[in-house]
Image (cartoon, rainbow, N blue to C red; front, top):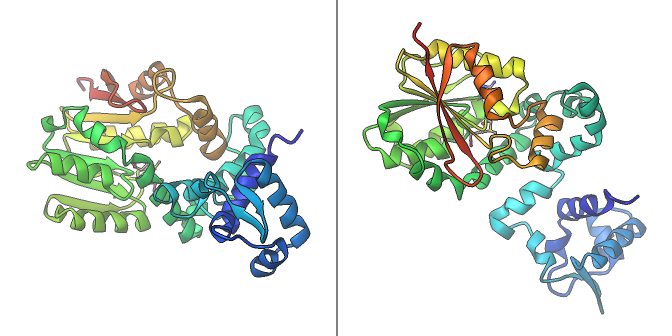
Length: 322
Ligand SMILES: C[S@@+](CC[C@H](N)C(=O)[O-])C[C@H]1O[C@@H](n2cnc3c(N)ncnc32)[C@H](O)[C@@H]1O
């Protein structure tokens, strides 16, 4: 009956900053409620539940954060926990789309627009703070993966690479740093592309990189050796995934490769993330045969599959002879 109580209690605790506020001696519910401008009666109900979870404990001065609860503080895990849990961040807000899971299962469509009145990407565009938290989440979720992705695939075969929807450019910067003769071009939406420029300057890569503020539903930079789609296609339903692949195939030269880096279904994907892709984006973690079929419509042939990390596969497509 109360299955959602605990995850929501943790999210609300983080959103209100309770773990930070209650470090040390802690505070009484009345004082804390006055500071936070919330109901003291309701806050105590929340604190009592957090006590059963051992996130806080009762003290002579009210409630205080436990050593376990300190894992929920704003700077814990480099801020990643906070970004995932806070209802003010893109991730926390997006996960509430799960209340529309029944709609998603019935229709095969995202729950996010039903809950918020617009799709995820429009919502980010309308709220710069959500956009920034999402881009930061993308950086933090990839920190440990990137060195393995760079080492786990032979990027040296390419002289030019377009990172399609490349985010703030962390992966492309790492690839180019490891391969000094390679040039890169990143395409992403305006706010994110601006941040990518800063990333490349910080890595002294501005003379080997270009950044285009634009949409991957429009024409992509032509003639690159490789077009990289890192965690892109799983954000989209088949209709949109087709459009992205079409733009890659149109921009490619005959020997180009299209590289799809994703947690491929039944190889690297996990089922709860698969459900998340559905409720948030209307996308999914496709299986290899689904990618093969999707790409075939654009003259793309699956050449190789590499398990680059414990979480990601890299599917390499070439163009058939046209
Ligand atoms: C899941 S993130 C992946 C980012 C990056 N490729 C990575 O792996 O870290 C998806 C990216 O697609 C970008 N994106 C979404 N819609 C886009 C569009 N229409 N055109 C270009 N980029 C878009 C987002 O801004 C975001 O950076």
